[in-house]
Length: 222
Ligand code: DC
Image (cartoon, rainbow, N blue to C red; front, side):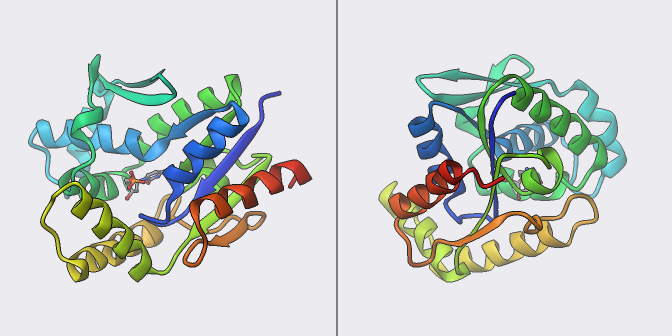
């Protein structure tokens, strides 16, 4: 039986950084499910589909083939045979992903892919619905959050370091709007699974959060 660690939480809580670190320490595969939703969102944008056109999304998703592979422990997302890693990290794609991930056909396709991966491999999977829907029997479930101001500040510093112009209050507003959208959608909204451990990283370092999760694994959280 493969082992699985599910990490859910709002945008910017540090899920991917932490999940990558744990995957490395445990020798597991890191599955970034947000990147898969982003790849589908990119496909819709490229097809000229609007966020409100749910029927068109349901039709088009059939032709969006998303797969992932690994190179030097880095997840590569392929959209119809094209490596789209360099195209999916924009605000535009993130916003479209939050909206298009409300579509039931999009979710069905990606959840099946994620479940198939976790069946084959030991995984650290992060997203919004991993503990509640994708891997309800995950060995360890964590709900990772942080204050919205802290999350915005982290993002702001990340963008500044890359030399990108940005405003802290605009980033925080966007983060709050995305949280609301992800928590209030009809299908698999973002919420803490009943058996997930809540970790608030506002006053914790990356190492402290990773240690806390490794400790849960060692304890055999489930
Ligand atoms: O984690 P992220 O910012 O890359 O995710 C982009 C969007 O994808 C997020 O706003 C909601 C959606 N998503 C989802 O619905 N379910 C997941 N398991 C992961 C992401």
